Image (cartoon, rainbow, N blue to C red; front, side):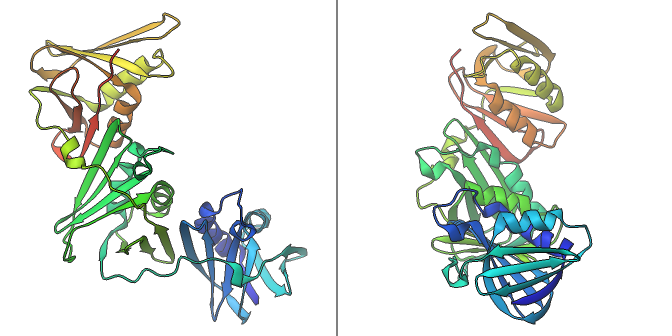
Amino acid sequence: MKIQVGRNELLSVIQSVIGVVERRQTLPVLSCLLLDARKDELVLTGTDLELELVSRAVIKCQTAGKAAVPARKLFDICRGLPEGSDLALETSGDKLTLRSGKSRFTLATLRAEEFPSLGTVTSDRVIKLPKKELRTLIERTQFAMANQDVRYYLNGMLLHVAANRLRAVATDGHRLAMSEAARDSKLKDEVQVILPRKAVLELMRLLDPTDDVVEIRFGDSQFQADLDVIRLTSKLIDGRFPDYERVIPESGDKKLRANREQVRQALARTAILSNEKFRGIRLQLGDNKLRLSTHNPEHEEAEEELDVNYSGAPLEIGFNVNYLLDALGAMQSDEFQMELKSSDASGLLQEQDGGNSKYVVMPMRL
């Protein structure tokens, strides 16, 4: 392999794929990026065997070839070189030499044949939508995913494709977030897949808030998203996601409407003195007032009172304040509404007009 490429172009492509490369690996080749030089492009691939990212850069190719190169070292070298400089890369045996001006670096490489690949997803289950729509769905739900839960099917996000909509759903067993976008799907049957947490976070990082189209393929055990020059392939979580539609409570008889940012700031202030472990906060509703209160083991207390629009009998209920803050932070509208039934029933939060997102939070005993 013998190529020439701009430092900025190569650095940008490395940055788009290096997120999948773990610092600690059981297989040495997984700490590498696969460089595949072709006619006029360089294809870079990174993988952890569960998730694969592929990106491309325009180059001048004198000799085509492949090499598995240490990812972090190549990234740090490129980042440290002057902006706008030109690079020359050449392989010889098990070494890659990188030259730029009077700088020269020689890196040990591994055989390209050892580098694993998740392959291409061949499926007729394909949908297309603007990047900003998919990004919004993920932004409004990803915070509710579980992290290293023994119920492995919760450590990810459900994508549910129906005839006229695409839904993203996440839950950790204590709260649930669901958001949907209208989508005319040509799929014959509904599709439900669970995308792993790492793939969800990488996808959100790569998605621009633009009208450019992303193409998604659903395989039997894999998911693939094509974003212009970047392709993300991920294994799916094999498990049964909870029946989320049953979790979403029906309309409660106690309804709260209030300014979203005002309540969010009051919750954040009150949370300062909440129990650091349980993060419990008490809500008292009645007479168009919302009273927030909490205390901690050091006998410190916090109280806030807000004017709100509340209809229903007086109610006192406890919640994990972080769950409320996350839900309110994911909304966009100036006002929000919350529906409640009793002190031991889940609360349903939505934007002021109902919106396309719903947030369910289980109560706490305080």
